[in-house]
Image (cartoon, rainbow, N blue to C red; front, side):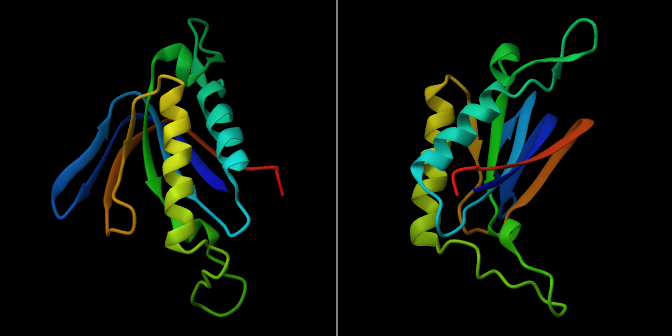
Amino acid sequence: MKIVVQRAQNAEVTVNDETIGKISEGFMLLVGVTHDDTEQDAEYLADKIANLRVFEDDAEKMNHSLLDVGGQVLSISQFTLYGDCRKGRRPNFMAAAKPDQALPLYEYFNDKLREKGIDVQTGEFGAMMDVTFTNVGPVTLILESPLK
């Protein structure tokens, strides 16, 4: 799994001009799934994200986690994270898992975050979505599961 983590002041996802997910302080996540990802990959990344210390304390040091600040998550499924642009001009998406494999793992990942007490909002898997957010810092990190 590959996840782009963006610290957000707010985030919102709409489908067909209807808001289907909205958060205030927390993380906006773009979540990609590849063929050999497992539930263990999802568990590892959910734990990493819940405890990632990128929120400032009173001394303006990144010492607080999502759990510490009571932050929320807007999780967006993003198969294009596995787009290979090395050849030609059009990305190759062969490394992205097919929907029948990706959707259950994406949902499992979100459920693992919820089990930690995090409010998780999502987009609509496979839909054309409009995502808007305010990146604070900006802080943007790319996390990948090490269980390969």
